[in-house]
Image (cartoon, rainbow, N blue to C red; front, side, top):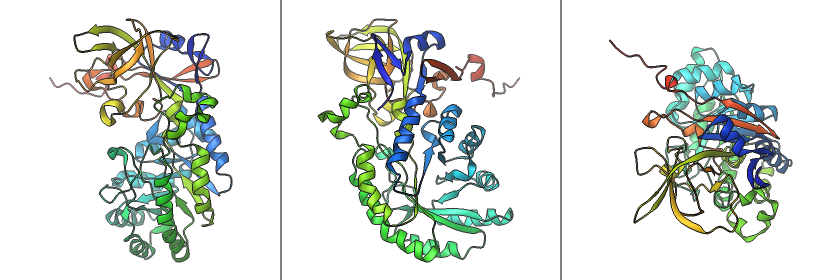
Length: 430
């Protein structure tokens, strides 16, 4: 579900017309729905009511301060992967003691910062990291809270770049080594064992991998509860969202029809996992990112030219792969819809491409779209996660602005970069 719909022929976010946003703030432009973000959080929170649980939002999905603040106001914890993300959470009003710190390459400076901020736990990714954190905590006269990340060797059935739970992935400690590593941790004077963690991947749209991973973990978790007194089991994130048919999925009716069968609902997820988790009698942590914000955002772009060749028709827009890299990097699908509703118009097969000097700079290939003219405005749907956070200044293109909508009001939550911003931190010699 989301809050993007056509109203009187215009695509709106909640009740704010998106053409108005484009004219007021320019394009390319990220627009987020505050209602959708809060609604997704609350629905997941309610669905987990049978468990003692904590939802720790994965900041990497969308790290805008206003988005973090929205979720902090709901009582969310946070899954962070860098000192910078921890800094953002604190600046947005989030509670550092509700932050789990993940990532295979935490630096000494980051670990010291997180210890001083008293994060909930460090997700330990290797035995060397465990030793390093113990030593750093000793130097600060602190005890580091830890949860070892287990690699359960379960396929997430997702894109290989975002699969994280197989033995060939760089994440976590092999499940058959974990008990021994916990035994080591118990003997360390500056480490406090708090829990155990896993995360098998992202954009998972079937329940089977989640169930397989939890079932594989349950005996280990029981053993750790008995031997180490762990307080929580973090099952990670990874719940997938709708990309194909994204616009229609904002309607309740869509979820009752056949096209929704490839999507994973909250009810399916919790219905299959809660019985397994409830039996552990432990606090359960979840780390959703894309699930909370993915369908809550769109990228608005304006058509610059329509270029016809003997082989293709190219719709050239002002957004590029530097603004939204998912199609180029992951072959990710984003639905492309016009801001003015086009009913019963003939469709033409086109490629929607950006201005960046690479053939990989595209948003849609061989897509059937209604007639498009220069100056038209388009929305790239489901762009709220891993959109702006993965954006770059490639081709010296300024980063786009971000807008947050609440009802009939919109506010700028990140200003558009200027050319001067591009070189602000550079030092020219001579």
